[in-house]
Length: 383
Ligand code: XIL
Image 1 (cartoon, rainbow, N blue to C red):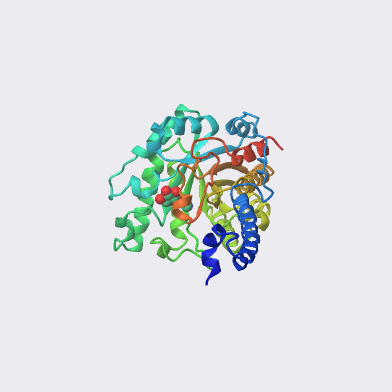
Image 2 (image 1 turned 90 degrees about the vertical axis):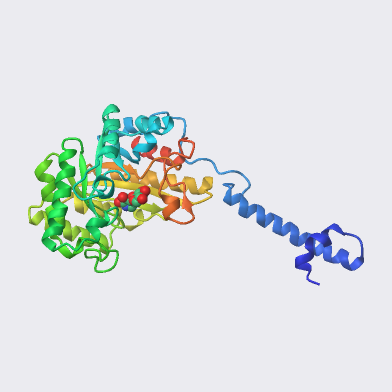
């Protein structure tokens, strides 16, 4: 007989026979042990930390100061990625305007939505964001002029000569910079151009790589020509700490500066988990070597993803990471903006892109402030 499989039946028949009774005593012990273990496991899953007592939130939640006011006092941008079609949702729009002094288009200023067909431009999505920002006293980051993704087929699959492709890039950059001239504080001119693989040169899966570094230089020059007041950024992921890719980005940027290319900053995307990277990998030292070049640094797309369903424990850890990141940024005056990629867990790319993860942002699905929010708040208050 397989007792394991028949536990429930045996348990129902306690006392029916001596043999069965002995088995049942043992089973009771096993069952009790399993129940205790189960409680411990589920307890830690739902935030009881294994002690049976729910873990307390880490940061004080009683201060109603909003992030944008605190950030204004530091002269730093606090922003979020936004989708214009969601602005009709009152809670979405109100939360955004109340807490942030900066926005960036999550999608609508990329090449695809703007110039899906060659020569025909649609700025409606981006314009809606700019109007919203103007109405609410917010600044706008532009994202992104040249990226290997969200780029139309006619660009990617056309059989262009190198000269033709360079002209296509310059025309797009010129048209978009022209349209938004004076309205964008900082543009991500080139996004994710570098490979993740050693030696971290230009990525192999970009239609632009065949033009070499020239396409990046030329895109920056074209943007600067029509919008000289916009700060121009190179933006990438996996370059937040000291590592091979960050070194490659550093070398690239030094080269651009040497050639007189108008680059003013680097964007560190910061899509991370709670494992502490990049704080554990000399984040501040990395940031400092870029600001020592005279560049600004923006945290452009922060989200700190955790396993879902999340627990109070994992949300506390997440809040600590947000806090420590912001505190590190504030220690360097040339870090001038901190943006999260979305702001409510109701609308976030994380669950779609990182299987099993979510709850990465500052507000929960019902727009309630999370510990992550209070972590940033505490850092901005110098706590
Ligand atoms: C993502 C958006 O969040 C998605 O909604 C979209 O489908 C794809 O792009 N790095 C970037 C961003 O620079 O533009 C990406 O945004 C996320 C990774």
